[in-house]
Each structure stands twice: as structure tokens, then as C-alpha cells.
Length: 297
Image (tube, rainbow, N blue to C red; front, top):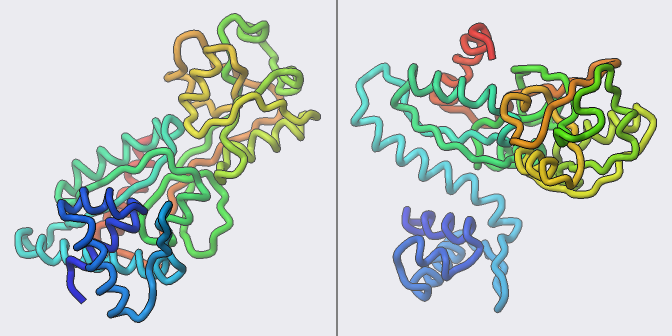
């Protein structure tokens, strides 16, 4: 088995298209197919399901992918080790986050890593919902992820970072925009903008649960993954959005964040990582958590 075979496999697995993977690897499509065949022959199993319209990973391909990535990452670390002085923490971390919901946590942690461990290369992956984050942590495509808590995974560790009380984002001309003592039940006839139902979003689950507890099921007018785009749709008059108070400083023009009275409901921001794998770089990142929390978010 050759390193270039693993590089080819990862490219095809990520692109799910031999032509795009060939362009990415700067090689012709036919030699790439031959490399994949050699890898499959050496493993004794097919890694891809191919037809004229699509390419998909087999179950063996899904199982092999995180290990292939780890081999290349270990090789990169080995090459880096000869260039870094003893005692210096180095490596590469991939961190998943949702988007505007992490606008208080993400900058603090990335800045702390950059200042304390400049030899750690940090890659950020945006628009990662909690359920997808857990799956990617299991697969090894993410090292850490900001998630909504709680999660139901037994293969990940989590730590609570921040709690934010929920409120409503409404258009500035909304009748409740300037009122005091606003309760969620007052929005029973409104159209809501939420994350999609099937993406494993804690925000979606919290929205449905809170509305149900307030005595109604929300009328959903639009479902969109990006919370900031949800607020843009609020500004456009498409509906209202149930969001945590941390978005208040970044609401777009034409919208306002309205705090809710009554029993408070919180979005619990957490950090998650896999129990099954570790690295000095990840442990160094986790070691910064208490320092960042002590400084305040």
C-alpha cells in the first residue's frame, strides 16, 4: 500500500466524483481509477459503489476513511516533528462550529490557541449542526466541535461552556418589538423560521419544545440551517425566529431581539470531542478551556 493510494482514496471519498478528485490531485481520471482499483485489490474489498451517475462509499469505504486520514495526519506530524523544538506542542486540529450561535465562544478559543500554541494549525468547519458534529467526531473528520447540549452519544466527551437565555428575533415594526412582558405564547399565530427538521439541530428541538410548553405548535414558514440567514429572513418579513440572547449584538438591520418573560429556557453551548482518539494538540486545546472560561465569554 502506497501513500499516494491513500491520498487518492481520500480525494474521491470527499468529492464523490472521480473527475473532481482527479482535478484536485492534478492527475488524469483514468490513472486515478487505476490507483483506486489497486488499493481495493490490496484490501480485498470494494471501497466505492460506482455507476454512470454517482459514486458512493461502501460500508468498507466508510470504515476505512478515518483510518486513511489518520495515516496521512501521522505522516504530516512525523515530518513536522523534525522541524519543531523539543517541548513545543504542534499538530493540526479541525474544529466544527454552527455559525453566528458561536460568535461568543469561537473567537475566544481560536485566539487562545493562536496565542498559546502557535505551532498548532487550526482548521474551522462552519455550519455543523450538533448531530452532524457527533457523527464527524466519531468518523475522525473533526477533532473538536461546538455543540448544543445535551447530546446522546456515548462515544464523545462534552463540557458546558456557556448558557444563553432564549428570546425572539422579530422585525422592527412588529407589534411586540417594543413591548415589555412579552411571552412566547403571544407568538402562537406567527410564522416561525427554524433549522431543518432532519439535521439534528438542538436549536430546532428547543424551538419545538418551548412552543409546545407554551401551548401551541409553531407554524413553520421556512427552514434554513444558518441562524444568521434565519435572521435575514426575519428582516425580509418571512417570519420570526426563536434564538438565544447571544445573537442580540449581531442581529441584522430591520430586526430586533426581544427577551421573553416567564420561566427561562436556555441554549447550553458545549464543546465535544471523541473518547476514541486523542492527540497532544487536542489535549493542549482542552487544557485552555478553563483559562478561557475564567476570563469570561
